[in-house]
Image 1 (cartoon, rainbow, N blue to C red):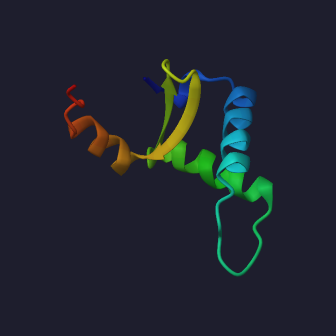
Image 2 (spheres, helix red, strand yellow):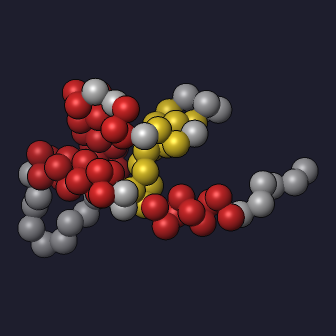
Image 3 (tube, one colour):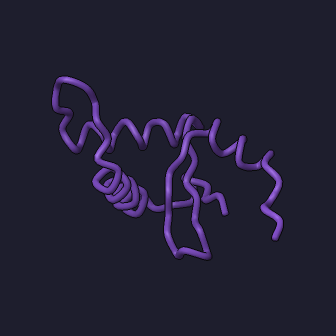
Length: 81
């Protein structure tokens, strides 16, 4: 389920993004990028609509993915057993 970021309290959004950044451990190349900078970059991407916040009821977790990945997942038919 997609969560509209504008409906979240600022503290809640920051905590979700901080957890995501720490969990992902993204590699930013040769130079280290401070945690706060990474968090600000992800929040900005969410607010610009370049990334989306998703809640999984099945896994009871929140994830952040690019809008392109989200759109691709919406076009993929569900797996059939």
